[in-house]
Amino acid sequence: MRLHAAVALAHLLFVAVLCEKVRYDDYKVYKVTPQSAEAIITLKGLENAAATSYNFWSPVGSIGVPVDIMVSPDHEAQLLGMVEALGMDSRVMMDNVQRYIDEESRPRVAREDEWGWERYQTLEEINVWLRTLTIIYPQTVTLIEGGITSAVVTYILNELVTSQNATIRALAESHDWYVFPVFNPDGFEYSHTTDRMWRKTRVPHSILCFGADPNRNWDFQWSVAGTSFSPCTEIYHGPQPFSEPSCRSMAQFITGVADQLVAYLSFHSFSQMMLIPYGHTSEHLDNYDLIYEVGRRSAEALASRYGTQYRVGTVYEVIYPASGSSCDWVKGTFNTSIVYTYELRDLGEYGFLLPPEQIIPTALETLDSFITIFEEYYNLTGQ
Ligand SMILES: *[C@@H]1O[C@H](CO)[C@@H](O)[C@H](O)[C@H]1NC(C)=O
Ligand SMILES: *[C@@H]1O[C@H](CO)[C@@H](O)[C@H](O)[C@H]1NC(C)=O
Ligand SMILES: *[C@@H]1O[C@H](CO)[C@@H](O)[C@H](O)[C@H]1NC(C)=O
Image (cartoon, rainbow, N blue to C red; front, top):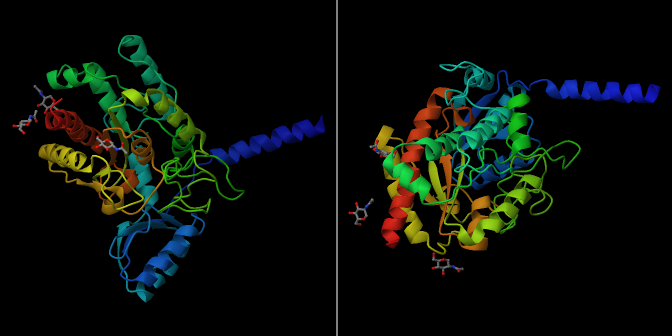
């Protein structure tokens, strides 16, 4: 009996510890630009070390490509030492990450318990809202359990279901839509309850470090470029392809609808890009020319509302080599016609902590480009 009580107590303590939110007081984000091969090697070394002191908000690429690094207060001097020794350019993007987290979670227009796009939604709220949609619009919405992380996605879904705009209605009615507002539910929930900066899954791959990068775990050119074998990094690809249950179940679902699949669009934050496969090679494959042109016109449509500028190109060329993404897997496996990854606002001023008042403007401009993708694709292919 004693043992049971002890186990129960230990469990409670464990839970209590887990429930305490991780704080980022005086953590800073630096934008550091390596100017030499030596600087790249040094940064890669930091990237492969445990992510507790240095957390890379963007992976190390090539010479001249800036890297956003969040650093704990006790490692700041060390980072700045390296920056100086290696002659890297650097500037502070955020001076106290906790302040941005507090700002981001403060409700503005809407009340805390009200559904809306003036603040970020939790997993439970998204689930309740999705179920409500299925009750109000039973013929239109079919709910699919599955493992994308964005208020912008729920906004677009809401428009597809409820908008009276003729262009949006025509697009909505002419296709079947499968929308997954939360693709990595465990990681998403953990980012709300415990650690706002959490981006990986929550699978315990090592004693020290949990989770793998769900966008480097897919079974196409897995581990080939821009990923890590170290479970403690943000870009850990997992012990094998599809080791992560959320990726696996999503892949099974996509396989089931692949022969009718016209488009696969994935939404991430941040850096204002429309990315085209592939991430493992600089070669332009399949229907690159068409998809580049459609992407370019969509980015123009996106800019027309508020002037937000997006870059368009392959993952490999526009950001850095990175393999094992869901988009590359879909394209590489099924040769699906329209495949894009959106990296939404902003360019690193707020990074992963985009203020809630930017959700609706981001959603509106993204919707403009979303509609343009389909219009231009069908226009250019004469369908
Ligand atoms: C993929 O589809 C494109 C047309 O969209 C076609 O030109 C290309 O040959 C296909 N690639 C493969 C590997 O089937
Ligand atoms: C319909 O929505 C599109 C895309 O957001 C927009 O460009 C267009 O102006 C809207 N039309 C009307 C009549 O509001
Ligand atoms: C379709 O393409 C034609 C010619 O390329 C262009 O004039 C027209 O504006 C396009 N339509 C749409 C809906 O984008």
